[in-house]
Length: 287
Ligand code: NAD
Image (cartoon, rainbow, N blue to C red):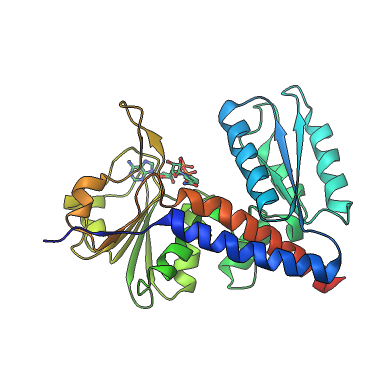
């Protein structure tokens, strides 16, 4: 039996980023300014610092303005709210992203809920969550949007298919399920309390794995010919990156699968650029 086709997220993200850069160019010509993303980074979490640097670099490469507000770990919730208010009111700011996690003394939800939904490029604000679930135009979380783009680009039939999403986080699992429902798939959500998960997986034509458990899904869990999107990201004992799916055994059964690295990861940043452009276009259309 032939091995599953690898869905090349690096290549697909690159093509999308090029397309976005072209649209940004047209935006700049039409509006005499560039779309602007402001990222707020509180504290000195090393991984967050790397993510933020990568986001800033990608934004600038796409021809947009990228600003980073680096605040000390001792920043109070009140000071952070004040900064978000200022960014909400600043007409030169199109997108606002508060990098998570925040230091433990700052409650997360009130901060996310204080971002103007029109500038909420992470798509975490309850207004955007509600719009997504009611099928209205919204800013949608970047990682699940990236997964849907991979499925569309790989021409995976979604309408009427059985899709299973493993994971029910607000960042990945739930919005992923909403997007698949919007694409007319028959959607189930598996999670840490689900019974018979391997059997449920074997029923799925499309399997999205976002459980945060290293190589949890094995080939024997997968329906022959299924498409598998692996959102997980882990560093193995050998120092190499791997996902929530055991790629070697899964490739023997699936028809198509995303590798880790080089699958979903590159799509997240590409979708952040797209959300920033979308936010800028929507704001200029309104003003
Ligand atoms: P999370 O920890 O918030 O949520 C994990 C979900 O998986 C939970 O809903 C939980 O119920 C479920 N789960 C946990 N253990 C399970 C098990 N044994 N069986 C079934 N379900 C189980 O994580 P998250 O933020 O949704 O991220 C999930 C994974 O995706 C992580 O590995 C994360 O690093 C990765 N991630 C990658 C990107 C990217 O850009 N590539 C972006 C976001 C998250």
